[in-house]
Image (cartoon, rainbow, N blue to C red; front, side, top):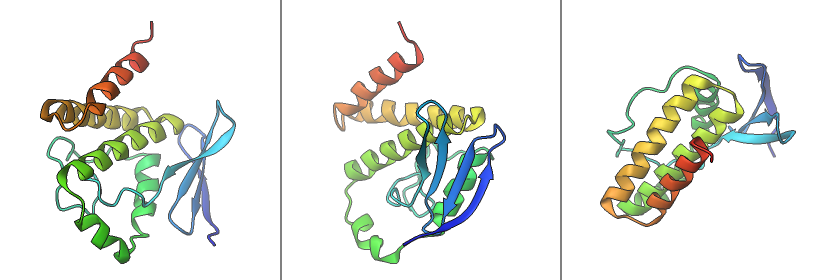
Amino acid sequence: GSGVERVWFSTTAVPVVEMSNGHSYAFHQGMKVMMRIADDHFQASSLSSLSSHRSQLVALPNPAGPLSRAIQVATRTFKPQALPGIIALDEEQQSQQTIAHAETCLASAMVLESPAEFKHWLSAYTKLLVQSAREGESTSGEARLRELCEFLLPP
């Protein structure tokens, strides 16, 4: 099992718990639960430091903040046995994992109440969705863009 490695507070007083397995959790004020904000599940993402296919659209450095700190902890738990699965992914699978990674980081930045990181991940997520829709990889890119617009511009 894994144990608690460290507990700290973000600059907006959101409690964060780092576990020995590299997962980090933050307290979601609205739902009154701990939510996972970073882990090692996106090693094949183009946004991952392990990827050799880093996306030029989102290659900008992450702003310093609580999510960046949690992501650094998660990357320390790299498992070499995951490499064959990462290598076997085709471009569309990697693209879908990259989009899911950006979407997760966007949600995590919201939980952490980190405006700079939210802005960064919103930009990255939007660019990835536009690129996916343009390339016609799947219809989910367009649907997700519509969902994002509805979230940002409620009726």
